[in-house]
Image (tube, rainbow, N blue to C red; front, side):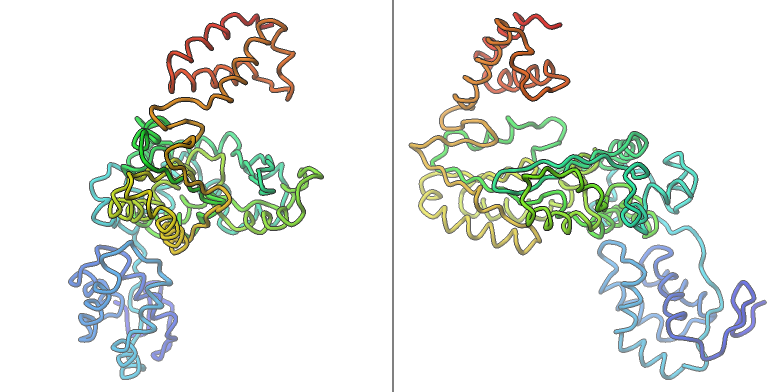
Length: 458
């Protein structure tokens, strides 16, 4: 039997024990099971050795403040305790009597939010269970998750988990492709298939969602009086690791599991990755990119990133859909491309509407690429993601003509004559471009397919 001031491990504590230790123990007990008042009181009484009268009011305040939301982190619960006036009074009054009698060291149960309770995702209640689920040992799990940032600080690319490729975008911006190496990619694909793909996407989202495509993305905007196109800047690196950890806690995973899952799906780009930048890259943009990508973020190139970006943007999609509906407009999103369209009434105040959209996005932590914002009324070419939507979905004429000329020259002069960039899989590239045209305009695609079939490949 434990005496006052003694833990379950027999460590003697002073009767006037430090506040930090007491609050951490109490926070751990609140997080160790269902966040109902009765269970919180029971676990708290077990930790403290007796059912203090102030425990029930504290539990009620906790449930009102934190109980109905995503499972909070332990430090958030400790912060709540520090600011709770009732607990402050109890700590002051019973300062010499409060002690930790038991430490609850059991695996934390799944605690999904109400919306997530129906999703068919695996229950993983400890770091050890996560390692077993992924087929790793605990050391391997910590290495792949890299929560301490060893990969960033050491900066040895050969020992890291990613390959890097720097792409110069229009307007001087930089895009970094972060392709995970084979073993990490396998882990991410497992998370994608068995967790992320079980979560329904917002109806307005069409990018990287099964059964939807770029064609379904533009379909609601065909033949409309006005079309507004907006682009989100630095889309994937906008999603920080803390946001990804919070999402996994929303699914019900304990804090330790959520952070490890988030670590596997995020990356902090080491400085050495930028040494391969071309000399023509703007130094100011390069410096800004190094700062942006240095913090753990969703890497563009990881199989989990599009799905995580979609679920983490769910609230934004709800708000934008509601805003569009209030103005009689349609809204769809394909990754970082946003599209709105409506009739004559929408066309009259489309500029004001775009300002409201930009303000909403800034509230949610996104940056709008204003140079890419386009207002397209009737009488001009209305196009989204390379597809003309004035009267029916169609490919852009100039793009079609260029592809047709390339295929004709390949058939006449050989494919090597047109592969000016030295693409190692030039045939697959042309196949993909022809398939895109076939999806949008089958008649034009048929003509291009005939040219493609005439090419003699080495």
